[in-house]
Image (cartoon, rainbow, N blue to C red):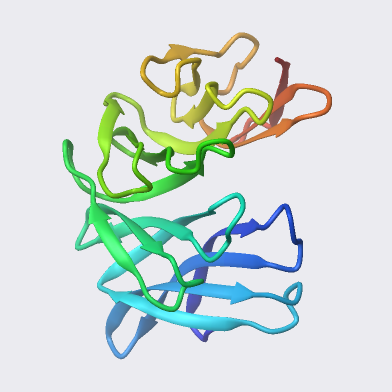
Length: 214
């Protein structure tokens, strides 16, 4: 990695475990840059890209069948932003999310069956795109979304790990309900799903890991 670099999120291509992608930021010459790192050989070697100045990169997601298409969630001048690359991270476009206060996009998820449908979590709500990130609509405005997970067995179901627990949508993010039964510590930092056994895991800040049968 680069000197003085902070790595904030990592994703591995499920179809090719040698392909690893990392989003972060670095301080260079008195300025902060969003950074992107890529390895195509399982982490033995890396390419690095400082791709946006006065910016942060907090989340990364990839197209399920073409990992040249990469999304990075972060911020530009404290405005929540989704960056997109269609050439493996060599160049980037950006879309600033509107409809709420600033700060950063800190979680991203791509629908595995319909890759044009994406979700972005922020401190001030959850956004959805249905056109591969070209435009975004706020779908839930009163959540601090820290992590997102799409049910791999049924992508209409999305789980959001938030500062006050887990929320679930069963209609592609249009409506949301609490999903907190048995969850005593509700500051959820991380979610994952055991697809084979249909179990949702939730890791909390200082409260351990919980699981729930789906």
